[in-house]
Image (cartoon, rainbow over the protein chains, first blue to last red):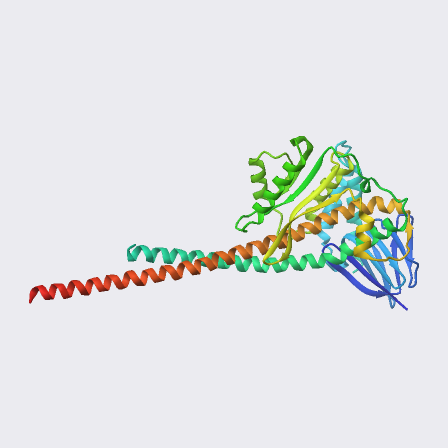
Length: 132
Length: 290
């Protein structure tokens, strides 16, 4: 038995496949969702989602997301999501550099939280892109 | 009767115009189908978010959030979606007309409301009429991505959260079909009748476990939900805009056709009259010689 995984963003379906296990990181910690999991809704932190199917592992970068689990279906709702091949590595590197620079400046006007979020997102994208 | 040369000039300029409106019609048609496809791609996301929000809102009554509560209304905000370009028939003017009417019925002074305007045409119109404009966005692309409209959605939802506004409405043209676009007003915030409305459209949902907690999920889900409502309406408005432009340009091309027929007829008449006159003159001249 397998679960159906789909990653949905406002711009359409990014990913759809079957899986043996889906690993995500929620606010409380990492969870692995197996088939016949109880229905669950959880907010995700900025971390790659990993989908394992027949020994293959795929990662998807997801930000601003939720996971909705039903017994035979896992849906990940995110503002943006990319598969490794869709990630613009250059852009992510630039974003990372920019965020680091912002965090290093001790400027009151800079939104530290936002910069940290941006850094996390860029790092996640680079990590996912690395695995392709 | 106008001279032959004059009529000829009018025929060629009308033909040119028809070519332009015909091209614009085709451009609008292709953009329209793309906008509609985008709207459809967005549908599953919206549906899922609705399902999750509904299951929380219906699941237990003690889940609460400032966005779901009605406050005494001191200030209302309207998001008004117009286009950047004209030539779209009554697309912008219908919207602004009903907006003005509603506002004059609802509010006594300009302190009671503010407007977030999207699109150049509406901005220029409302500025000239001295409406209080809180923010303006122009140059939205034909197929706006969620990222692109984030600043709009963040700002408006943020204003509600900071309590600088107590109500948020959205005014846009709803796409019914290519011939019809309806001016629509949607109340975005507060989400008071949320549970009832969603129950109708979504139906029963499973009993979820929530991590970390229902309220924590509402905390991040509701702003996202409100933002996605705005985005959905924007996509709808874009589809309507291109449909309106397509229809307007089709009407213009058809008019040009009618005009060309008439002009061609009067050109032929003038030509015939000229020939008849010439023959008359020749015959007259010949008769005079005999």
